[in-house]
Length: 320
Image: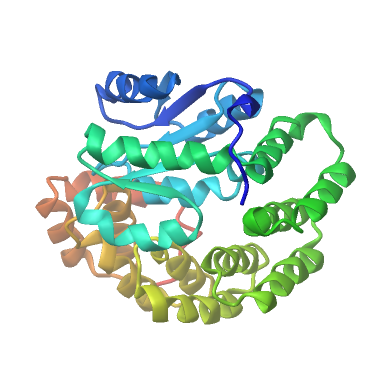
């Protein structure tokens, strides 16, 4: 068993991703109990990653709100090696608590709102203890050095760290992402497949492979893998963007609408999902349904219609 070491943090600084007013002070007061400070709160995921890359923050807290779903932010963070090598605490609104099992399997620490000391502190403590263990601390140090090492050095370090079971999955995700961004699709695929073969139950690696296939314009393979995840997690809202992207890549507009409807008409619907669903309805000639959806959410259909008529919608498949 690994013994935590608290001396491995570059700084004890966290950054928050949130669009909710007043959360900065609340999280600052809670994290101070562990001698951590919250440097700032931002709505920008890319800015948070950049601050982490610079060493200004060593931990990310992803807050959840009706307008800014934390689950979607966390999924996007998996496209950044810096974020994969960084401790992340994901908060969820009660109506989105069904996302917690999959997020946990992806390796994130998850707490359900409302944020109270009893709800927050145990999860924050668990996150710190995990990432203070020697193997995780080594991975964090590698994250600090990303801008100072060559691709060859990074790949070699990740291959070596993959031998440590506790961080194997994170290293597989990081190496596959590194290889994919370098245009080495085949090696990225083989890296993930070899790991899945050893342990087929690791959903995080399967999701990495889904992401790889979507980036590699292989939506049929991505859909096949999503079907295997559906057995365990149903049509989780975390997987819906992947379903929708794969369906649109295959020209299956109606299928994309069915997948997206599960989010856009749910209690936990966010404005971006509603807008995209309305756009797909509009593109498929279902103007009345789009108008009803937008009116119900307090939006103007005429403004929406004008916006998309003037926009470049070449990314959408033709209706019919």
